[in-house]
Image (cartoon, rainbow, N blue to C red; front, top):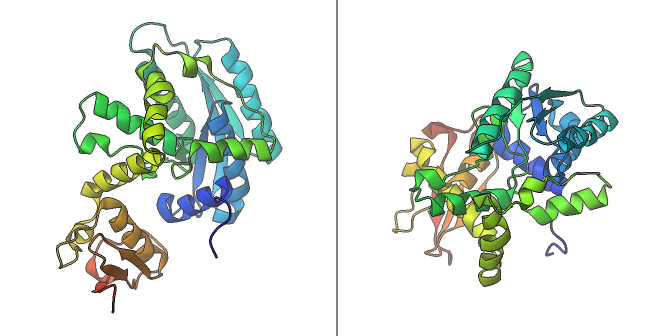
Length: 300
């Protein structure tokens, strides 16, 4: 039976955590929060999922010292963390106004968050979602990035995980509404002096009008281009009839191998590529004994 409604944010995040951000059992995760809607939704979902997935959750916010409202916005995050029983901390910076402000703020924010995570050996969870990833691909295109530069905001990169990255903005907003989660609006997100804001408010809506699935397409592009960093085995596992697997399809194969379950992916030639993994749940496979691929014609 076809699904009558899209999956909830909790469902999407649970799947992303288990299949693309792990292994997380026994780990600590520090959620980067600001009081804004995206990070409030992430904190809300992670607070519910932490016991199920088996990680310890912490929350930390950074006040850049640029807006007096920032402290009150972090108060919203602290209140939600308290409600969820999540330890909360905050860092106040003294970032000087001036050129390249967003880049400098980002660098300082990540440094502060990693300093807060270090005593717990915690992974850092950020609230980037699928629309953010699509915007970032477009920004990189506008700046002339090549294929590697477009492979952005993966679900996990080193010490950073992105639990919301498979969820669109509508799912985030719906979660906030359904669960009555208070959030703040950062006015810099409306300032068209920043190129990202113009991409968000002007370019992306135009592209959505022309192609309603553009956010999904741009995310698939980032997945495909991220395939350059996949294990050598996965890059070799191509159908023999000339149809090549893209990065997103290869990731599905590897995810199936990690989860210990078969998966069938139909490629453009109409051929079914089937993975029958031997590996059980654990790290992504990196050698041939962990991944077996076979193929059959669609009419067989």
